[in-house]
Image 1 (cartoon, chains in turn orange, red):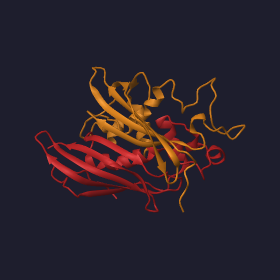
Image 2 (cartoon, each protein chain N blue to C red; image 1 turned 90 degrees about the vertical axis):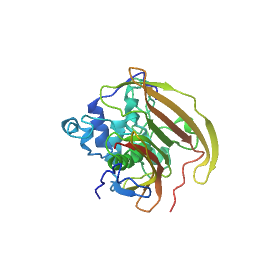
Image 3 (cartoon, each protein chain N blue to C red; image 1 turned 60 degrees about the vertical axis):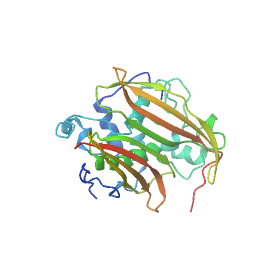
Image 4 (tube, rainbow over the protein chains, first blue to last red; image 1 turned 90 degrees about the horizontal axis):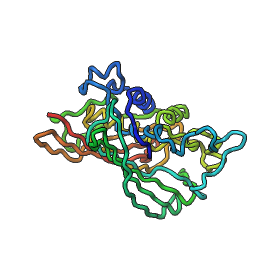
Length: 160
Length: 143
């Protein structure tokens, strides 16, 4: 995630909550006032949606640039995945406080490790870790996000 | 199954809560998550690509959709704004048609002056009992 800034808005929290099937009134402006917090807050995994604010996010179509998916053809294999598949292996969030509308969060990417492991279903798997600190307008640390991506050596075998 | 939020008094070691967080997941739910999260990887939304190019039986859900739906149990059980950490490993893919059941179990409770600090494990299984997501969550429950 390399958004320059992520302005947190109630409408995107609403869309995100709907997409994870969460009807908790705290995520909706018209009902959040009657909850314990008294206002809208973001669900724990909401920072995923910061991708909307990343101009270079690779998993979104952009006009004038090649995009992957079936159309006139079936699509193309992404260059980085070789004969396997690039997937999300782990995700961890530490909340120093709760994210809420009005926050303008700025990410600071940190160092991450890389390692490999032999997998029963995915062949040789290469793991890449990334750590991002999200701070508010006052420079206070709000969320630390640690993600691990994996590129498998082969298409993951299905069981059964 | 309705989930009742734990309080500083009812949160005890070994206490557990369970919730069906996805019932027969549809491709359109996956598409809705793609729109909200911004992740339009064709593996998740494009059946032709997933089968013919990537070599999978169908599209499959974003890991973050499994984590997000599992997270609805975490926030239901810990209460609004109380979660201090939440992390998972993605153990198996989630496919259209899957029904996911999440279980949250308290492993440690520490009563401090500011709040009651609770640690828990979380695990989500599909309808075959295979673990799709497993991890931990912590919360600070106000007194």
